[in-house]
Length: 198
Figure 1 (tube, rainbow, N blue to C red):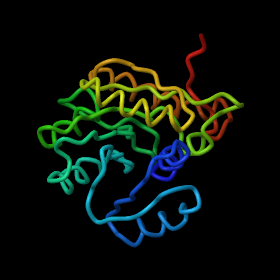
Figure 2: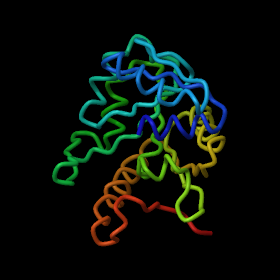
Figure 3: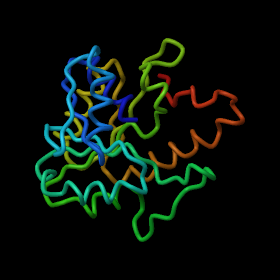
């Protein structure tokens, strides 16, 4: 997902800095993508938008690790609370969504937006399925933060759709899980997209 979101951001003319547990991995990814636009790697989180492109089970740890750099920034949660090895949802109680778990560990002043979790990495990398730009659903409690994420998606050739407050992350995560769960029946090998057709 880091590569996929970065590809859309770079396509939209945005600069991307990769931050990883191991700086070498972040540097390698930045080097691989240098031809696509302005990329770099760093030990510390910086920039207006911080995309949390890690597995859900690692997300709270990553937020705590960079907590001193997150206040005042927009944190984009692309995760789904799903055990990928058995394709089953994870328990997030007493919260209603994985996004609310992440919001709970984020420092005060962090503006969390749920986005990109209903898209698969491969389709997001391409930006479209069957010639149709991907729909990106957004949920968050800060309108300015949602607008910033919508602009990132729109600049990258995607169609942002405001799904409402952060409480809607529960439904977005359920939709993300359902999209994964129907892949065997569809036979699309994670090459499909969830779309709203007018």
